Amino acid sequence: MSKLTNYMRLIGVFVVAGIALVLQFGFNQALYAQIVISSVGSLIALLMFIDMVKTLRSGKFGVDLLAITAVIATIAVGEYWAALIVLLMLTGGDALEDYAANKANSELQSLLENSPQSAHLLKDDSIVDVTIDQVKVGDRIVVKPGEVIPVDGTITEGTTTVDESSLTGESRPIDKVAGGKVMSGAINGDASFDMIADKTADESQYQNIIRLVKQAEATPAHFVRMADRYAVPFTILAYVIAGVAWYMAGDPVRFAEVLVVASPCPLILAAPIALVSGMSRASRNGIIVKSGTIIEKLSTAKTFAFDKTGTITKGHLTVSDVGATAGYTKEQVLALAAGAEQQSSHILARSLVSAIPDKIPTATNVVETTAEGVQATINGQTVKAGKAEFVSSDPIKKLDQTTVYVSVDGKYVGYVAFSDELRPEAKAVMDSLHEQGATQIMMISGDRLPIAEEIADRVGIDKVYAERLPQEKIDVIKQVDKKHRPVVMVGDGVNDAPSLATADVGIAMGAHGATAASESADAVVLKDDLGLVSKAVRISDDTMRVAKESVLIGIAICTILMLIASFGVIPAIIGAMLQEVVDTVTILWALRARAGDKKEADLVPAQ
Image (tube, rainbow, N blue to C red; front, side, top):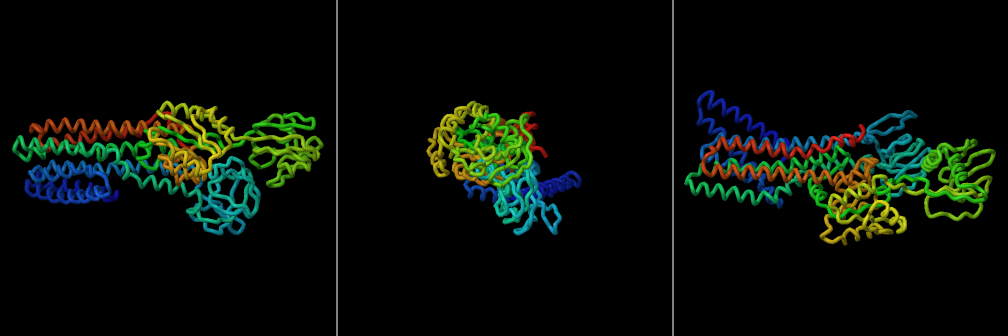
């Protein structure tokens, strides 16, 4: 049913109510008022019945069966004003659900404002800013330092270094020269470059986040799954009480009086509104959850599996080891490397400068050779820092990690090695997940076992699966036994996409705009904070608790009212009004899922 149809039905009921009020109380024409309400009420009930049949055919229970029966019953026994009130509840409830969904979706859309929406188009030697949707294949684009590359393309002029860790899971910086391919979503380094667009924005990596939000908007139909578990027994209970009351009283009016207070609102609206509210709360914290079903699964998750690079680690390289020879100390080697690289735009240059910021020597005659290294004059000597074959003709034993080798006047003097930095919040996240009910936490990495085990020990991971290819990662997830499910997989790169799709819930770390993993994931963390994974679980727990409470509270109140109405002490019109009270209570209770902690406001992405 479209949102426009829901609003039109609500308006239609209000118009009918106005006409009926004028007829009965303005012109004293009760019969005509009854005819108007009965005719329109029967029509709307028929349309809702058709919608319900479609719902049943899709394999779900039509929870508004009770309300439709109540409308028909009250019209049949002449309680047309009660029928109008029930119709108002139904159509108003549907419109309210649409409003709640629109509110959550507007917050999802606001998250996109933190990402670039434009490209610098080069036309006739002048730069024109356009929206990324206007970029065509073959357009020339300028990408400035530190910007997210807007579309996939080929560099035509300039050299730079880009960070593709969010796309590939590879933490090493990538040097790019003219003719090199760049992907949207990658982060440019400190140098501008010109490029030709190879793809439109819609076909590039960045637009994955747009499609992700649209997918989140299109999923409210899944929200009723939790309510389905309560709908059948509650419907049967209502019909039994109403049927017994009719039999005992011998009056069909009693049947209508019971069904009028058998409000299906807790099932039709309370759970969906709570789940939409939970998604809204998650979006305010920088977490996009694609459907209410994912909220349900996260709240009961037993196993969490993490990729290493860019997930448990930052994906940013820092100095991990310094080697020295030929009479030089480690501090001297590090200082020489930082001095030579200090004017470079290379990502490793920033790591070197950060490692020794107050002891960097002055360098002159700096010449940078892209993808090879840097040559500079320091204290009258020629210093080279870069690849082994660039710095010296001496035989150099290469390390199996990202390394800058250093030479002085052509003589090899040492190296500076880099490693991926552990996220400082990683251990707290693992501890939190254990406290929230996780029975096992795993690391599934393509890295070597010693490195993976060292990281796992530091953060408190239970099991380590190292040197695993994408297919082998899938096998690990599939082999998790039933008592340890649902399984949540957390990753950030293309190599994680199959695992994210295989797991019961896939969470992609997508801090730099759209990631290649986002399409396969069920939820995406848009801030560079692993702590949002445990927060997503906490939000899911809170949301499901509120959803269940709102449903059970509504059912309890309705059951009490049905029992009272079965004795004939609640007239149909009063029962319809009491139903509105039940609806209000359950809806307001469900909206509590949107609240959350005040501290969460600090986590909203900067606009």
